[in-house]
Amino acid sequence: MTTLKNDLLLRALKGEKVQRPPVWMMRQAGRYLPDYIKLRKKYDFFTRVQTPELACEITLQPIDQVGVDAAIIFSDILVIPQAMGMEVLMEEGRGPLLPKTISTQQDIDALHIDDIEDRLSYVTKALSLTKQELNGRVPLIGFAGAPWTLLCYMVEGKGSKSFDKAKQFCFTTPAFAHSLLQKITDATIHYLIAQVKAGADVIQVFDSWSGMLSPADFKIFALPYLTQIADAVSPHAPVILFPKGSWYALPDLCNTSASGLGIDWSITPQMAREFTNNSITLQGNFDPSRLLAPISEIKKSVREMIDAFGVDRYIANLGHGILPNVPVDHARAFVDAVKEYEPAPNYTTV
Ligand code: CP3
Image 1 (cartoon, rainbow, N blue to C red):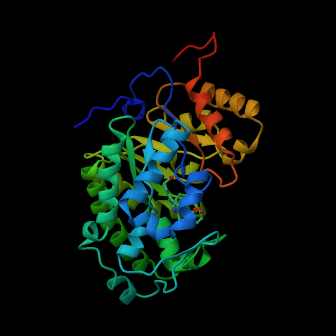
Image 2 (spheres, rainbow, N blue to C red):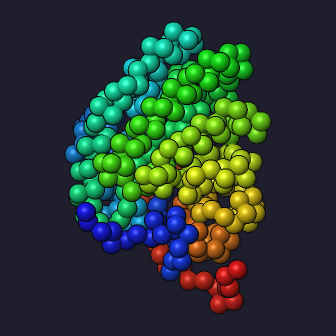
Image 3 (cartoon, rainbow, N blue to C red):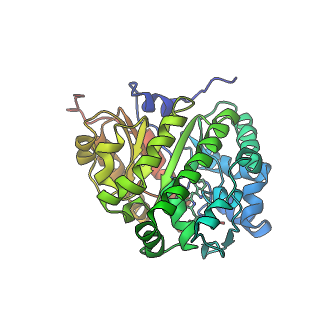
C-alpha cells in the first residue's frame, strides 16, 4: 500500500494538530471545470459515471487543476436507487428524473439489495483505479446519499422545493417509510464498506435535503439511519456526515461514531463549535455563491472563516456544492487562501 504524501484530511479527522487545515470542495469534480464540460459533450452522464477510466479522469481534474487536499470519486448519490432497480434519467441541465416512483409496500419489496456491490462494481473499479493513479498524492473520498435524501428522490421522482410528496409518504404511511429507509440503509452500508475495501480513505454521507425536516422529524426519519451508517462504516474508515440545513441536529450527531460533521452557511462556526462541545471535526461552511465575489474578497473571507473555526479539528470546504458558474481561478483562490493561511499574531489555541 502506498503511504499518503498529504494526509492532512485524515489528521484533521483524527483531531491531530496540523500546520493548516485541509481543503476540498463539495462537487469539485465536475461542471465548472472546462475539461469536464468537454467530456460531457462526448459521453452522457451515466456513461461518465459507469466507465471507471472516465470517472477516474474526472476525479483527478480538480487535484491537478485546483490543488485540493482530497479527491472525491466522480459518481452520484442516485446510483443506489438505480442499482436497487429504479430507472434514473439524468437530463443535462435539468437534474435527475425517476419516472416510476415508490408509493406502496410492493414497490419497496421489489427493490433489490442483495447483490448491491456487484451492481455497483463500476464504482469500486473506479475507486481502485483512482487510488492507483493518485499514487498517494492525497486521500480519496468515497460517498453515498443519506437514506432520507434518497427517499426524497425515490418517492418524489425529481428535485423539489418542498419535497412534500416525500413528506406526505412519511407522515401518512410511516411504516412504509421506515421499511424503505431501512432497505436503503442496508444497501448503503454494504456499498460504503465495499468502497473502503476498493481504496476510499474517508467516507462522506450527503444528507442534502435533511434541512427540509423539522428537528422532531429529523430524529425520526434521518438520525437513526445516519447513526446506523456511521456505526457500521466507521470501523473501516472515518465518516463525515453532511446534514445540509440541519444545524439543530449537531448535538445529536456529535454523539454518533462519525469523525466529522459538515455544516452549511446557515450557522456560524462559533455556534457549531458550541453545539458540538468542541468535540468533533467540523467541515464547511463557505457560501458557494461567495466564490463569485472578487478574488481579494474570497481570500479575506476564507481567512476570517479559518480564524473562526480554528486550525485544528477543521476541514475547509464550501457549505454546499460548487456552482457551475464559478470561474476556475476563483475556486483556486479559495484553495490557495487556505494553503496560505497563517494564524493572526495574537492567535492562541484554547
Ligand atoms: O463531489 C464531487 O465532485 C463528486 C461528484 C458528485 C456528483 N454528484 C456528480 C454530478 C457528487 C458528490 C454528487 C452528489 C449528489 N448528487 C448530491 C449530493 C450533493 C449535493 O449537491 O447536495 C445530490 C443531491 C445529487 C443528485 C443530483 N445529481 C442532482 C440534483 C443533479 C443535477 C443538478 C446538479 O447538481 O448539477 C445531479 C447531476 C450531477 N451529479 C452532475 C454532476 C457533476 C451534473 C451533471 C453534469 O454536469 O453533467
